[in-house]
Length: 247
Image 1: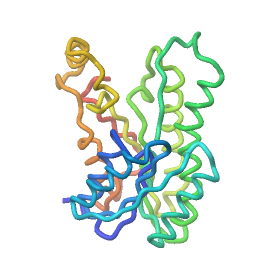
Image 2: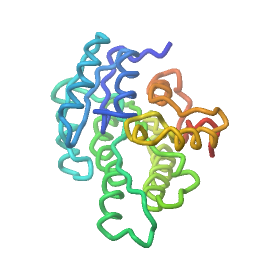
Image 3: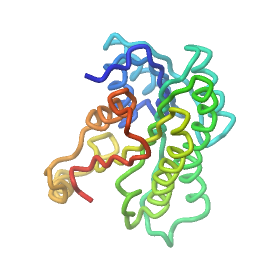
């Protein structure tokens, strides 16, 4: 069983969806969790209430990961509350579906700044504390589209592909300092984002997945908890795809 007792984790975009599932699985393993949100405090507080129901402990913290100084404030908040950061989960992300020709520079900037620059911002601010501590774990949330690309999600795919390269490069740089960097690349996960799909669309989607079902957020969360723990002590620089063999 994964043991994270006494560890401190930041989960960006942890108020809902996959981020919430990750926060809860880290809690089940014993970690204290900082739940980052940008817009919806109510969802973040609901996640915190679920953490408390599990007997866990944590805080919510508003921060815009696309902004370097805001990311710095998030990290400093965690340090002020717990005195250390053992685990950083870069989960915050946005997407926009549409033809490439219909996208504009603002779409590019918004998606890249949140999905990719946000990973840089949070990692850059956390790493100095991990270097001082002599250990740490960073897990980036990518996507199966970061592995193979998706039509009508060109910018999103580029941002997630960038996360994959960032993960592998940073893992090589920080490995000698006992800091591991990995990523998970989820496929189609059963979250609020997919709740608007009609039954026919859902069935068509399931038929494209060899396991014939959508993934669950907790299935992603369990992999993140494993990657956060000593059980994965020799796993570094990897992109773990969680898509039911869809891609």
